[in-house]
Image (cartoon, rainbow, N blue to C red; front, side, top):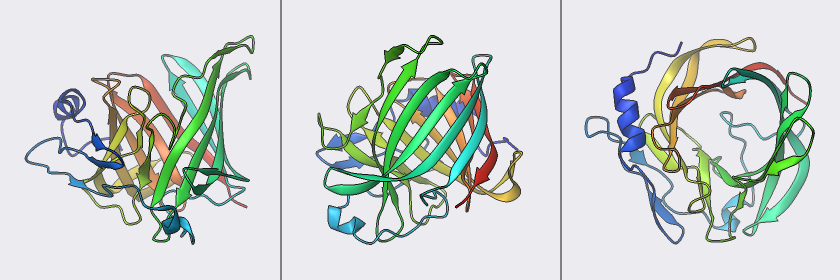
Length: 252
């Protein structure tokens, strides 16, 4: 299920060879991980608010209000349950009407470990953009620990990033988020037709991407997507020990 088309050594180089986005205003480019597997940089510039006037659904990243995903994860030996829900709420971020997605991660004892509100919007062509997040981590006693990782497009130089192209292709590379020193994730699509097997879905038509960030050198993670489901599996391949898999999805 998780055999890669590139070796783990190449992935480590990918995360440690300064493959950062080159940002000038709202434009960016993402370098290719290796010369033998050149990445195709997509969506160099942030679309204008008018490009989001008539959003088109993206089957790889569904944003239909009322959809709820439940996942199980393990981080550093601890078990977590994650509930992600597309709400019916919207807000304006950087001039764009975004959909609010509520993400709650709980420990085995039911206490909240992390609560996040993510902001997404789809363009008229179906590309999904990420406009930021308000996140908070909590101790077992319920007290707030920090809000590290929170960012908002249009504030402090932050720029929205592409979370899923309208028509993803192998070698597509793109910046997913950007606020210098806060949010600098990037992705590289490496396989169509990936084998995916979780309690919720079993198919050979998955989409595999690799992700990394300049802020976490040496960490490379893999995400698997399935049309109509969205993200169904996440796994650190190097530099971390985090895994999540989809248990169920409830559609409205």
